[in-house]
Structures are given as structure tokens and as C-alpha cells.
Image 1 (cartoon, one colour):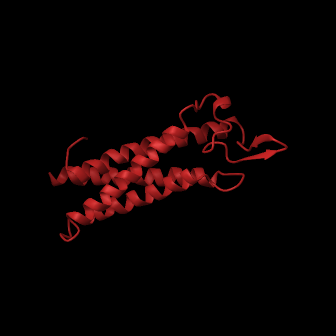
Image 2 (cartoon, rainbow, N blue to C red):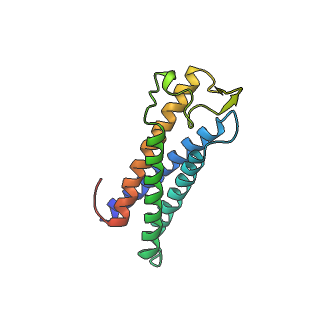
Image 3 (cartoon, rainbow, N blue to C red):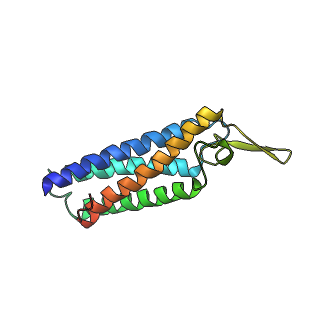
Length: 161
């Protein structure tokens, strides 16, 4: 049973690193203004997932971490991943990465927008950059939801994977 838990912890760590990396990349690609709050939240969630997986891994060797401490951190990380994954899914619901008409003014994807004389102007950097940001954002949402499942499994003790 410990081997399965260790494997889940490794995947939890891997997915959290991916979430953090994708979120930071999206935030750094912001051209106008600051990155949307959801992008910062996703980066926080990735960092929290890394901490949760490391604490869970340390619980194999330090018995005082096993139990309520690792359970609480996993529970918090699980809820954070679920909230972030749902928020991204809601904000990306109409985004078709192959169709710039559905993505150019999306809060996460556009790279920033400003209103000039009542007209909205967005700095999306061309179709290739927009498609890349769209694919990254959708992958970020997917990995947050996948990591939710891994964290949920650690919290509840059920074997989902």
C-alpha cells in the first residue's frame, strides 16, 4: 500500500510542478497590465501542491507528519486545485484554440486589453502566440483537475487511480 501512495505522491509533485510552470509562463506573457488574478492563483496552487506532496513524502519518514498534518495540507491543496481548475474551465469555456475570434479578448489568453475611446484593444501577439497561450491555459486547467484527483485520493485514502 505504501508503494501506491509513494507513486501517487510522485505524480502529485509532477503535476504541481507543471501547474506552477504553466501558470508562471502565462503570467510572464502578459503584455499589458498585470496578469489576471486567476493566473496568480493557479501559480499559488501549483506551489501549494508542491509543498503538499513534499510534506506527504516526508510523512513516510517522519511519523509526526503522518496523520492530521498531511491530511490537512492535502485537503487544502485538493480544494485549491479544484477551485483553480473550475475557475479556469469557466473562463475558457468558449475558447477554441484554433479560432482566434473566440480567444483574442479572453482574460487569461489575450496578454492584456485596454479600452481606447470605447474600443477594446488587446495585445495578443499574433495567432501563433494566442494559440500557444490557449493550449497552455487549457493544459493548466486539466493538470489542476488531475492533481485534485491525486490530492483527493491522499486525503480520503480511496484508490481512484
